[in-house]
Image (cartoon, rainbow, N blue to C red; front, side):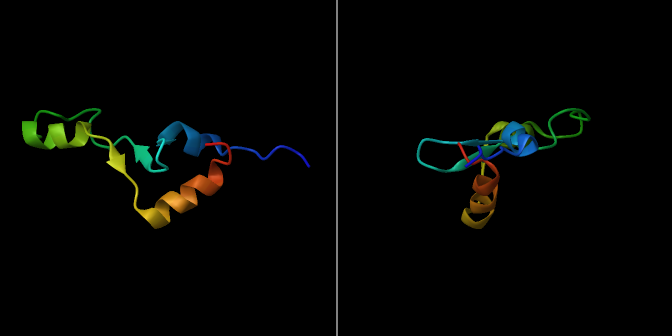
Length: 65
């Protein structure tokens, strides 16, 4: 049986933790930061955790994660 292929676009955006949760970097912290409050920027710096159904879909695209 051939090797299963990893969806590279998903592999670049998501990371599976040791406990099986899927982490991602939140959007909105690249530019136009002056009008965003410090609290908002701090919340954006924290890694996001996907919900169970979305995580399940992402894990199917990452067979070796």
